Image 1 (cartoon, helix red, strand yellow):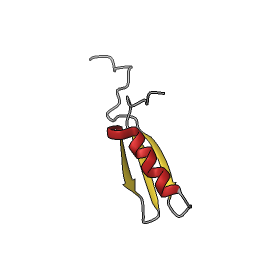
Image 2 (image 1 turned 30 degrees about the vertical axis):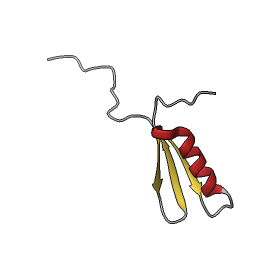
Image 3 (image 1 turned 180 degrees about the horizontal axis):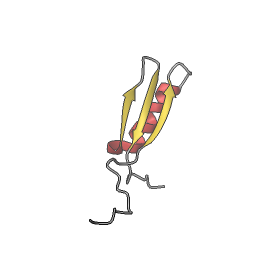
Image 4 (image 1 turned 60 degrees about the vertical axis):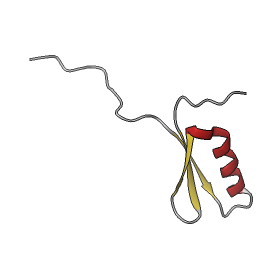
Length: 64
């Protein structure tokens, strides 16, 4: 019998999630500015009519 593998392997990539409540004045514009800043490394997902998540994938650090 083989010994169990001691390392764990992730089956999914890490992501950074930020929730935006677009009922707050200026928040929809901020969401879209952030999405544009991260370009192809980010997506927007709807939670409901007023709440959206900005999903940022790893390896996407912005330059200063």
